[in-house]
Amino acid sequence: VAEANIRNATVTLAHLAQNGASSGQIMKWDGAAWVVANDATGSVLRGYAEHGTFPSAPVAGGTNAIAQGNSVLAGGNYSAVGGGNNNQIAYGADNTVLSGGRDNRVETGAGDSAIAGGWNNVIRQGAYVSSIGGGSAGGIGTNAVWSTISGGRDNAVGEGAEYATVSGGRGHRVGSGALYATIPGGYQNAAAGYRSYAVIRGSGPSGSIALS
Image (tube, rainbow, N blue to C red):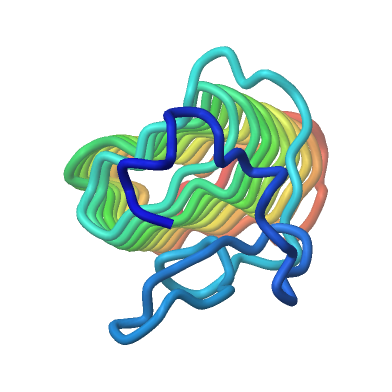
């Protein structure tokens, strides 16, 4: 049949045979002939599903970054946001992971850090190689590098309190500059500012303070 004998819209998809195609496959040119192949430019993503409208689309702003969830930003290079709502990895927080939860953020310069989830947790600017395991309202202060809050509620590591650890509990404060301070748990304990190697051994009485 010559081309001139085929009118527009006369050869519809209904005229095409299945030709061995399965659901989701399409017709592709392999360089020599038309073949049936998967509808993907690379490897096929398996084991993944989503449901919902996602009114604010995720943004993978960094180089080789991955962003999933609603209103999320993976701004650091090689950073990843695994899901959740309104989670943010700032531009310049490279090699950082934020697994999920909501309203969590890692600020610029706090690269190689991680927030596992929870709500309203923050790793401040310059606090690189720091981590928050979950919980809510946890905060690692500016330049408090290599610090960790494992979880709990309303726990904070102050500015410049390098290598500090809060294991859990509620309402703890590691003061600014309290290097190597550790609070294992309990309620409203404090390792005061400008004191190195401050350790509170356990849950202790409310408001206990380590100064040396």
